[in-house]
Image (tube, rainbow, N blue to C red):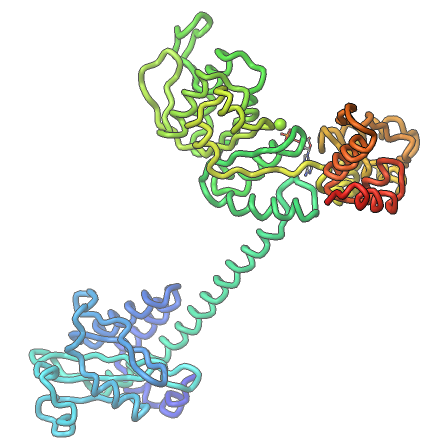
Length: 494
Ligand SMILES: Nc1ncnc2c1ncn2[C@@H]1O[C@H](COP(=O)(O)OP(=O)(O)O)[C@@H](O)[C@H]1O
Ligand SMILES: [Mg+2]
């Protein structure tokens, strides 16, 4: 608390009933503001009202200089041109560390030191320090002009109490602001390390993916999810929606692969009654139904040229036309698309519109195949086994090892299938390697050439498959790690 004020508490008796009431009101008002600038402006308006002042000003003092933060007039407007206030009075408040009151400014010889044209219209000035942590933090100044009443001592006392309340309110605002900042920081930190909803994985690849997903979720950008089949594209699309500001709005998805063009069109865009035989009513398309939400176009690489053209229009103008209709409807949707195809290659082959490709490719995100994140296999396995049976299924180390040594062309989807089968085969609550059945890994080696060529090709292929991991490579080839190392040297493989 303000020391200066405590010494002088008896002076409170000087306050009029009206000023008491004002203080009460003010305390309420001050506690309602959450932003510093608006608090200060409110303070100045209250002062003008209560003191019947003409103008008031708030200057911030930071040990070196004073800076005017806000100035108001009796119309509750900010004064832009604040040259006319007396900086001399402000200096005096800082110097004396006390409130000051000057009557009859024009006739006071004491004020000759502030002599300036700036004061020529001013009749009385009141200046009060605002203390924070025992130091002057700011100065409140109010003045009246020639045609007004003079300030009184009781006005001065009022302002002292007032300034103390302001100081408390400022403390409160600062701590609220600090809390808000801290919260923001925390939210940010959590979002970069936090898991994605329903998505399991702690590998570096998944952590990177998670951080990208969290970032792009905050925007409305179109996202293109790339990656092999079964890597979790659908899961990620849904996660983006759940993490976005649209989370409470609809999320709809359309699988675009192997579905007749006319059916896909009517699903996406809807139709007008009579548009085709069987169109007995008007029907909204899914894009329209997902208004304000997110729409996921799965297997976008499969869509026909006609649908590509219509989708381009949706992306470019956020407009759709129902089949057989002429009116154009605006939609506000966030689009996410996914494909396991190489869209750029499809563009080159003339099978996919280049302009649509660029519109979709705004923010491509590639999901890593499972063989590039073996580290996730144990937790993924436990996660799925728990889902199959309520009682805890235990997976034995040799079974895990078998899973980790496989190259998973079908990715997580294949892992789920393999585990499902294992859970059925196992009659107890344990899963051993004998329950894990894996199809032979395909070998894509060219058998022409010398034995050395084949050896080299196979080794390179395997290394790539296991992301350069020599232990996994050696194990999959049934040789020692030492053998792999020697061969790498011998065949000069990087
Ligand atoms: N990281 C993951 N954590 C948990 N489940 C996953 C993960 N990745 C994929 N899945 C599951 O694997 C299956 C295939 O995923 P999906 O999103 O359909 O793949 P994609 O669309 O890429 O073919 C789904 O059942 C999905 O729930
Ligand atoms: Mg899919």
